[in-house]
Image (cartoon, rainbow, N blue to C red):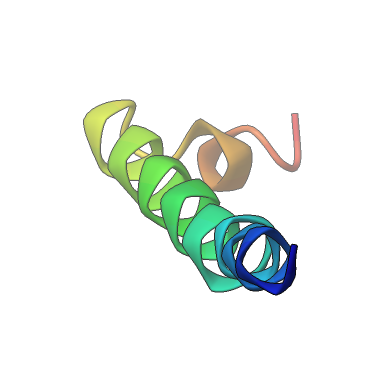
Length: 41
């Protein structure tokens, strides 16, 4: 059971945070930063 808890803390900790960060960076670059360009519209 300790193995499952350790694996769960890895997947829902740094792994998910890294995936979300990389996906956000990827879409920011691909879509040319619409969240910045259209901020004052």
